[in-house]
Length: 314
Image (cartoon, rainbow, N blue to C red; front, side, top):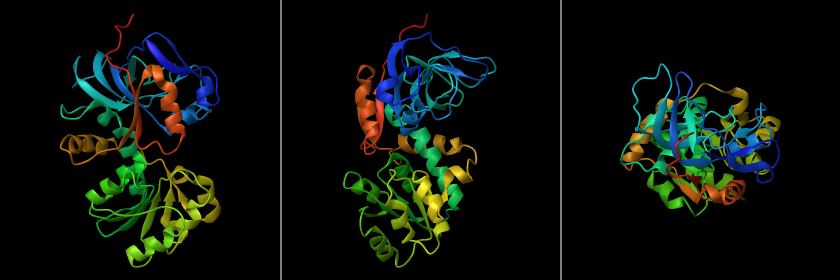
């Protein structure tokens, strides 16, 4: 099968190679899928650069949608040919950007939900829900989501609104109307953001979830929206948060995955009541375009690699 992977650590465009590899075999408790689409995330770029070092080669593509074509021992409730999606283990010699991928966790893909829309869900929903859990969001909370146009931010806005919370979010023009359609109040990011947020909220917000691209100015600006630095939690601006007394999810987590929420969001998405924005979608042969879009930090939505029906494994 064809697979996109790296044999040494470094910048993704320098170390990634599209090459042939043996299809993985599902271990007990796993299924294997013929991959239709996979996503490209900042985490993939971090893996190339040496995050979680281990045996090489290593694949990228941490979310897929596809069709079950092999089932490991001790697996029940799924059959060959089932349409599924889920997160992909990243410690093996191949991952989701491949003709075939193995999954430890998977979800049925509702027929009304397109493969790319399904594959976009796991990481964004899981990460967003964990952040909301750490902040203790309730229906009485006024929450600021910094970076509502990012995929995790978009998920956080929707999940918080589903809980009944009041949500204010920062975003550029690309996603403003879609965010407002969820019931969130939207203001531009950038200079003067703290004043705009406090004006909307009528004072400091209760808590902030920051999922915006790394930026030295973000955390200082967000501290102006709250009464206490500990009311700010970030998943992206870690160094500044630690220096200035805000919270960061990597120090406090992990709390475990919230894949129960992913399954619920898939059904909501199939009903048109939840979505993760999609950005660039390119064929596997054009993987460099996908990596460049992800590296831009503002890709306009989840970056998708389209693989189509995989070749029969040898």
